[in-house]
Length: 239
Image 1 (tube, rainbow, N blue to C red):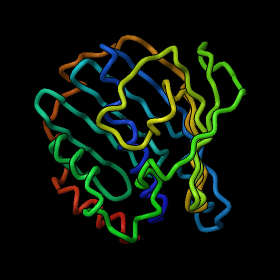
Image 2: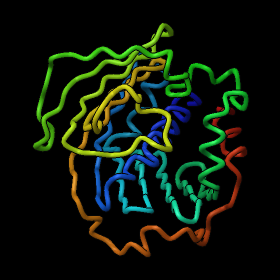
Image 3: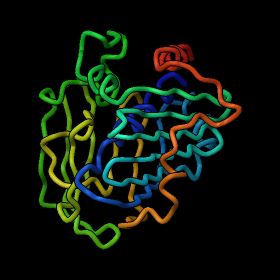
Image 4: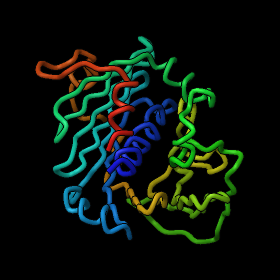
């Protein structure tokens, strides 16, 4: 379960900060999980129907990750205020983790702060260690023409990207989408620690379609226990 928790955390921090070049929009991903590990296979039915939905404007973003009956996680960011809020609700209770965006970015860039036991977590490797293979394969996803790229390293970590250059976005503020892969990932697969995660865009709109003041509210809801990011990381390392 620890591996699964860490992989899901990877997905969330992959997405935060992607859309700085767009003014407004909404993206929905369908998520499929699979594994050859018998222990992890037993847990996978809890994640049936998982989705990730993102809303963004020029200065705000909201990512909602619904992992079946296991957990629902929301990350809200405000670039101007340099603030973020993570809300988690599920089998572990209701938790709220407020934070400072610039500090989170600084922590991700400082390799000395990483736990050596987590060196093989997807995305925490230095991107220079990864090789990118561009292929001639193409396919259409949601009306966008996508090209295939394979990103891998010597430790056996592999990611497959289906990206489109028809959608422009900024990679500033995130560490996980490889800097050498151009365009926006309409579909990607990750293979790590015995688990495969596939995410595919099912909807892309150029409007958030909801009240921005409500979507990007950084107030901690009633009933949520406030905790630090360090406390959350310890929980992930415990199971």
